[in-house]
Amino acid sequence: MDKREFKDKVYEELAKITKSMANPHRLEIIELLAQGDFSVEQIAEHTNLPVANASQHLQVLKVAQLVDINRQGNFIYYRLANSNVFKAWKALRELGVERIATIEKLVKDFRQSKFKFESVTIEELLQKLESGKVTILDVRPQTEFNKGHIANAISIPIDELKERMKELPKRTEIIAYCRGPFCVYADEAVAILNKAGYKATRLEEGFPDWQIQELPVEVSLN
Amino acid sequence: MDKREFKDKVYEELAKITKSMANPHRLEIIELLAQGDFSVEQIAEHTNLPVANASQHLQVLKVAQLVDINRQGNFIYYRLANSNVFKAWKALRELGVERIATIEKLVKDFRQSKFKFESVTIEELLQKLESGKVTILDVRPQTEFNKGHIANAISIPIDELKERMKELPKRTEIIAYCRGPFCVYADEAVAILNKAGYKATRLEEGFPDWQIQELPVEVSLN
DNA sequence: AAACTATTCAATAAATTTATTGAATAGTTT
DNA sequence: AAACTATTCAATAAATTTATTGAATAGTTT
Image (cartoon, rainbow over all chains, first blue to last red; front, side, top):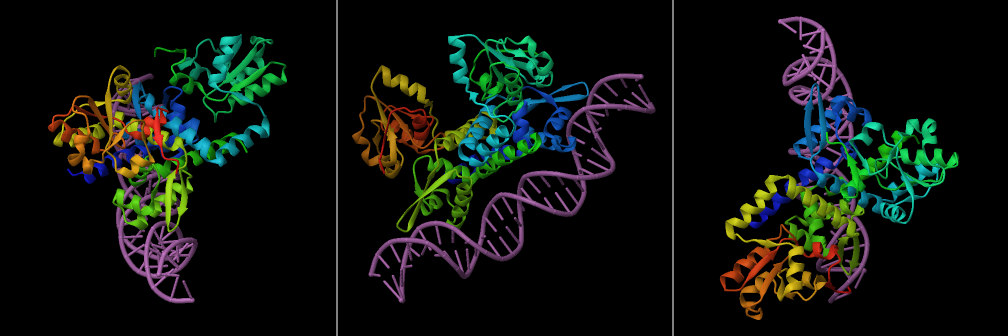
């Protein structure tokens, strides 16, 4: 094998992996699976895809070895194959957010149209945790919280927040988080809480970003 | 704009960026541009593409805002738009190297078919630098060395190594590096040097990996 | 074993990406 | 201004990716 042939094969392989990510639905699936494992049906519902279609995209990811499966009864659960998959997604996300004004604008327009809040980065949250009392609020669905969450976070899914917000302290600062920077549950939570007189801010990033940095988490052993 | 519409647009934009990278030639171009800027002709030559073809791939990268241009006389020089582009490439590369046994195998087969040497990681090199004397040898073409290189590295392009190796110390350990883990100049250098009685090893990663970690470099101001 | 359920498969048409070729363009040098 | 050079553009055919639909499959429950 000569040098050119070798190179061609290396880049060919890398391109295969990159292609397996290069689709809006598959990027969304990867982001979702960063929260934990999900069945095909659940993935289809979350991403608004017909099941057969979701399944096809999952096959593409499986062939590229970005996801693993785990059969339980009639259900097949998909999960990310390893943490490098999330790292690659994160790098692409950061490239996107920095480079494409469109995305920034989309995010801002959407957030500002309903709410207009500042957010706190993971680093800033760590500083706050060191210097004083902060309540961390996880507003993702209960099942995602159960799969893994930031250590000491309180779980109140966004749908239950209105009835259950009395469980939260009125005085201490509340940082709400969800799946990632594009997830709007945290924005909704901040809107609800601030209106009711709480002191709430959203975390810019999501649980997987926290976890990948090896910060303290509580995960289910399943 | 409702939630689903917002999500669709975000992932659509991210997929556009990802697609712009999802091609073997474009991945190779990105890796090359991580060394510095190059004209279309140079890029075409390095990647073994017809000029018109290279130009088309560069347009794709330009539209996605992964590269910038800089006209000088008749030549147009392309460069990476910012360090996040290299970070994304690096994340994909690491995902690839870890996940796809094929690539590992390709790299090993190719290296072992001609040479079979161990390599040193950036971290290991840093330790060596702390604990004793090491000569760092840059075997990339002179122009790439001039654009930027590891601080205190000596430049001897691989083509000139046989005649010029007497410039190198026989006693101290030599670490040779080039463009990145898929670049084989460093392997060739190690083979030549060890045969001649030098103590040489290759650096696993390349100059851009060193630079992105904000380790000491010498760069041209151009 | 039959009925059921979640998922995958297969076929197809439409959309997108790619390589190839030759011409056009934007700037430089004479 | 004419000749020249590097790069881009435009058109096209071939290859690949995608969504859609209905059927098939692998396993579970009755």
